[in-house]
Image (cartoon, rainbow, N blue to C red):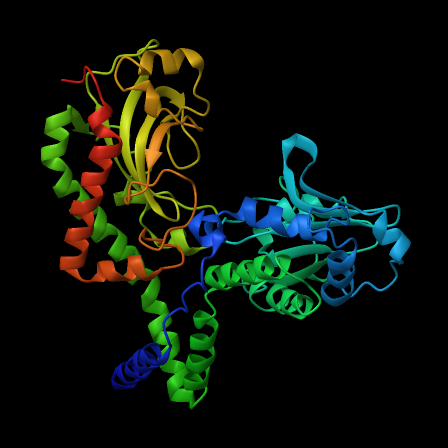
Length: 429
């Protein structure tokens, strides 16, 4: 135990020695437009750079250097490069989209980009089926490899070997590649590329890598230090799960007067993906999320068929959010739930009926959600520093360890959920 405490103390010292994230230089358009949290838009900018006919007006400059310096492919002539298509959101079977595709008469190179989004089942396996004379490029913040969940054939047993995948990092590979190129560029493109590099650095937050390197040195100081690290690791999943449970307990308490005010009733019959059952260590065992949550029935909302219920739900997928959803009490449950299930696709008829109970001007239907928002009130899908991310345990999540911070956070979150969602309920009393 004493060794564990000593190691924790040294790691805490390392945390204090890591400088804060550098602010964006000057006036950064990517930060102002909140593009740094949008994987799709970050990809579109990269795709335009790689496109020989892109708006940058530099021809094959970016593509040639990317193919040679990043992909280590030297067999593409300038003529072939000039006749290369670079497509963003390339549609394949079942309307799945590859983020970026580089293709010509000899090559088909898919690039799958991951910044904050989770892995999808069989995604890398499916994308590799299109590869020609290359490897699948897997572009992540720090060059992490995809898990078996993504590499394994969906519904099958085949597994895509890691040697068929080239892992590329935004933090090192892309930043260094662009930094070298800026010396050849003129204004205003040069300034724009520098702003893009700044945006990537904010996304990757390279302080994490520096901190990891310092902590690794601590672990390798002695067998006792390494053993202490293992013991601490065993406790961390339980600690993080306990933190989620404590937060949801606070939400349940804070929601009592709000539930009474808006005619909400705590759901106790189906216990559909409740935090009491789904806050467990499986949440951290790969993908998908266990989606722990807190469910309230909008009591006076009546639908046809009668099996449809309107719920207000607070949920953790990765980040915390809340919204109005539709639940079918007569539907066959999934593996984890024997009876009752979320509405997989909200129909126009359902929306028409829902408009009797919530202002349709705030509708943003997707899957079983009619409308939703993050605890900071934001409604655009993305990553926010002030929204707890329990998968990656960002600073907002860690601050909840302090009971006072947690209570204040829950109080402010409930106020935002009321302002942006619940106050738009109608005819519910």
